[in-house]
Length: 395
Ligand code: PLP
Image: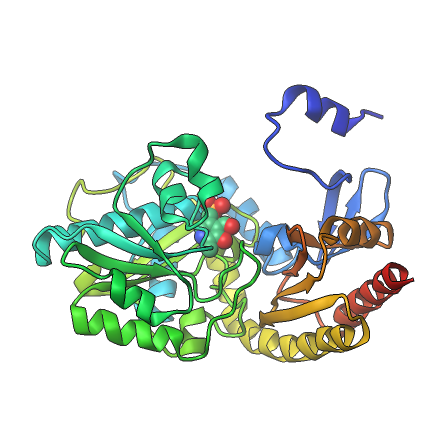
């Protein structure tokens, strides 16, 4: 049998610290490695595999579309693209959609929209306020937007026009707003920097401030959207509708796709302003239509809310039991457990050993973002593994 990690070390750019397991197959919330060993997956493709692994509805939709029409170009109308746009608009506060291939592409489009809006309506305002600790993607502009120096420092100079301020602090946004500001861009819950959940009224206050100043509110729902927080979109949890919203991850349940949505007033692109060869490709859109149909028909957000209400107290229970757990936080099926020391990797490897996949989101924290279809059984199994691992650490 091939030694895949050895071949990877030889041929692949070394940009990510891999967990030492080669996954070859998945079904539901389970994956199997190349030795045939099964794992319960609480990483979920980094909050992507919303319907679980290789869901039949998506596999069927992709297979059918692949046999019908894989790609034309945006010179022509294609059916799945328009079907998906309708589904997204009819189920959100937004009026128009542009579909791309990933999260960062969606965010790039969102910032382009905001800058056009600023040029047209705000006397040339172009600055976007983002939050410290945010993550918006890995393009040059999105590394600048992301409020974490490690993402942009190696590539400086990065595009200007972003101001990073403290998260969950309305006063910081107010203080940073000038006549150059065209938008505020936030994650409803910060995912990549450790599942930072803001105060319940934070987004409402930001919404009110944006209205007062006539600037746009962009919500990056790439990680929080499509049911993850227990509502179809995170903004519904917090009661603050954005002018522009970006989606990716869970939208295709593993098929790469992203989308920027905007209310009519912010949908200011005109002919030639934006585009991409694969944007709104029939194959990926057919997958996302299948995902959206499934999610809506089965009220998956409601299911997530319920299972999330079971998961969070279970994690709190572990916190009460193990004093080295300093914090447990999350919403829906996005959660983090923080430790007093940098034992995240140790916990990850011990979980792997016991057949549970988790994510080490910070040296001292792990993140759980399982497929949205998991039930209480899977939560129980994961909690059992964590309990066993933690008891080993105290001992
Ligand atoms: N925005 C958020 C909130 C994310 O969590 C991510 C990815 O983790 C991105 C943007 C970037 O998305 P992508 O990796 O698809 O470019």
